[in-house]
Amino acid sequence: MADITIASGHVTKLAHKLGPTATAKLFGLSQATEDAHAVLQAISKQFNEARGEWERARYAHDTLVADRNVPDKKRITASSAELAQLRTEYDRHSARQAKISGEWNDLASTLSRVNAYLSALPAEAKLNDAAPSKPLKKVAGADVERIREVIEKLKGDRASVIAAPIPSSEAKVMARAFVEEIANRAAPHLFGLDASAFRIEFPTIRAKVDAHSVTGGGSASVSGAAYHVDPVGLAAWLDPEKMIAALGRDIDEVAQDEIALDGATRGYREDELDRLILEAERTEEGLIEQALAAGMKVVRREDADVRAILGVDGPAPKDEV
Image (cartoon, rainbow, N blue to C red):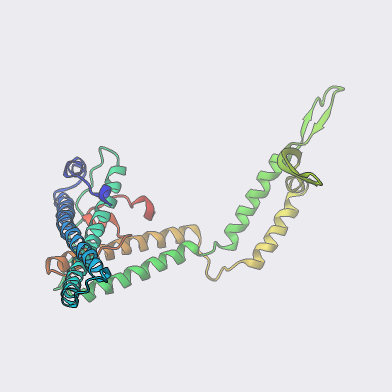
């Protein structure tokens, strides 16, 4: 994960895209990440030293036990006690390293996402600080979990809107456009109508052809292509209204108009849910900041909106569009 740390110089290059409040937040994230990394390096050194001491003691103990010529129960007992003490210290440092490593990874991952978002914006982009959120009451850890439940529900509602079927009326308009398109593509070309060389040519489509053969000596495969008149397009050209009517009949059989959303309604609901989700994520970030200031250990979600983290107005991150 070392390569995920963003140097202060690079952060400075990105800060010009932000307002004063967001700039302070960006540098705060960067500093917190660097501080966590420095602590991790110090703890990793202690961990490596503790592991080395334990491994040396274990080797000495195993050597002592293996010396059957001169068994020394007193030394073996003392060695076992020392080994157990060193193992306890080793495990303590291991747990500390895992804990700090997790905290650093979380910070570094958040900073990396912020970096990716800002780097993807045009060089001349300028994001304004968002309007301040409503003041929050004293926060408890449960408050962060509660707002996350709200965010999860809103995202579920948005997914339902996106997955909602289209009305049968829209499907029938699309079916008609489909039939007209393939009918036009399949329409024959007439040549030399005013001369003796009159001819008719139907457009062809390319189809992949694979041939396989098996003989006593083995097998062989050949790939190629064949060209033929499009049968579906030809049927559409011969009687488009009949095909449109048949598709309309099938659409009626599978339509779910009672839960369908037309384009305008779907777009409105998506926009409204996007607004509510971002508003809830801004509240979440405010709660996280208060929790961290109070000494609580809170990890930001991996999919937290960068705009909420920085407190800015701007385009949605590409992975959230």
